[in-house]
Image (cartoon, rainbow, N blue to C red; front, side, top):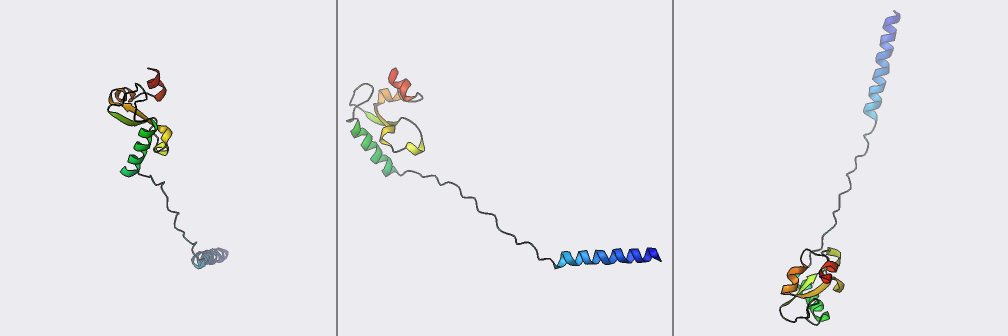
Length: 112
């Protein structure tokens, strides 16, 4: 007889546990915060043109390396998006000197 009572008690205990699990309200599920990616600012051709004009005028449309006023172009000293339109990041070079500037740092280029 003792065995039947203990089995019955175990069954009753299990029933109460199951009832508790069913009666408990489910935890509130929250949506994860959306990942906000940093927006990249794409410069417009107009902004680039304004910057080019400012740099050209600051160098009096003269090559900073050889002093030529023929076929001058604007180059960026550092290819950094944050400094893209800073006047101090521009240099005017003629086409001949400009070819030598590619791939060198500004300091290396001006030393040669």
